[in-house]
Length: 274
Image 1 (cartoon, one colour):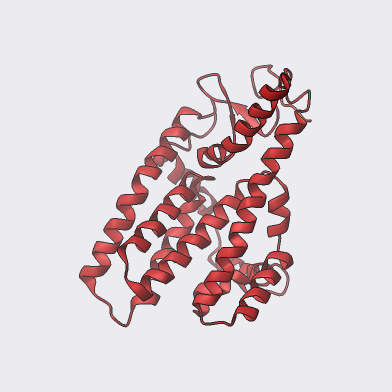
Image 2 (cartoon, one colour):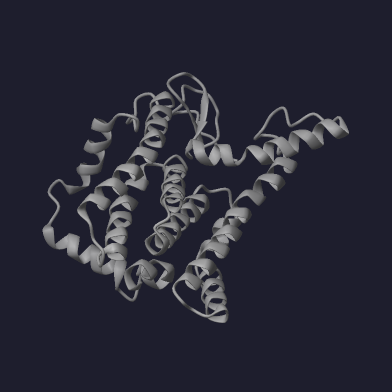
């Protein structure tokens, strides 16, 4: 275990946690992922009570192997859920059962999804909810059942509080995907009503996220719960940035043979092709 005493008032705490402005210790994941770990905590506590064992008193200096074991199944669950959602998504695209099974397994085993199911990172939950949201939106475009749009928005809302402010990057693709799915029977009134419902559902989650970020803000560092500070941080990389670097970056991340995200994460091609 590594610790950082210099930047935390002389107190030794793990590097993956920090002291908030209220003096309490917080992890760097979102509150949503912390809540997803509650079943593991409850199961561990249940086992300890049955056997009359006390939990580790000096964690993380003293390892609590049982909580490590039960918590490790959290991302395994989300990884399994992602595989099932991908299979259903591919079936929705009129692929055969064998084709859908092959592509979903190849995507899971051929990318870093397996790695994320092994470690306790919030990325796995974030990705599962994101794909689920797009899948339900695809279902909604076919059946126009309002419940599917509500469930898609709820999935996106839980995604908002899962990790950090990177959920903002997923909103434009979500809206574009909606337009691509519904351009044939496009109706401005229907678009506005659907967008209103979508934002009405996710806005409470946004307030939860920013409220939580404001509470756990690290003293002397940027407050991610302050929209102004967040906007300044987001725009800071663009100061004195050569315009050509933007297009080079887009090429490098999307279609280059070296680090293309489409090569490492083929599932990202689904919204573009279908």
